[in-house]
Amino acid sequence: MSARMCTRRDFLRSVACAGGAMTLAGCRTGPAGLAKRPPMPNIVFILADDLGYGDPTCYSRESKIPTPDIDGLAGQGIRFTDAHTPSAVCTPTRYGLLTGRYCWRSRLKQGVLNATASR
Image 1 (cartoon, helix red, strand yellow):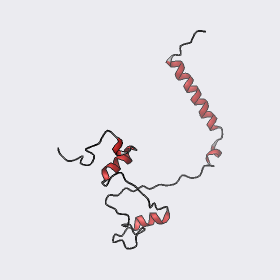
Image 2 (cartoon, one colour):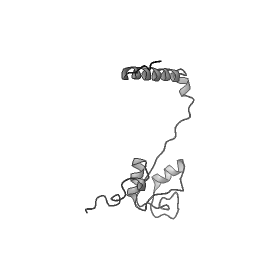
Image 3 (cartoon, helix red, strand yellow):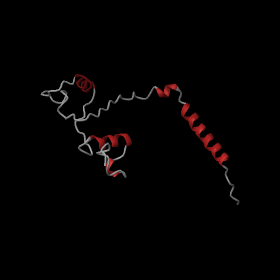
Image 4 (cartoon, one colour):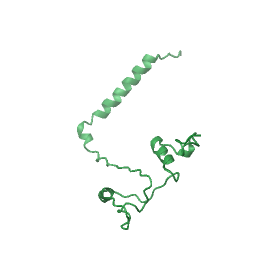
């Protein structure tokens, strides 16, 4: 048997047909199938520099800093009491949040902490 060469155009046509068939198969449930999903939760992520665990009054009634908005959010949702950071300063943590990578496993091993300092 001889092997038939598939051109790029043939390949793309078959992929487009397969994708269209999958899309149409997913659409056959109609709008009623979409209504069965539970509502997605609203997530508010706050990254604050120099804010200690006991600073918001929702965590410590003896706090010297009034935080009524954070207390209101905490009263309406979930409070997380166990958090970890890869470093004692904020720059590696921000790097990890923005890139989705562990900051010390990247090729950037230095210069993260003092990025604005002159050498």
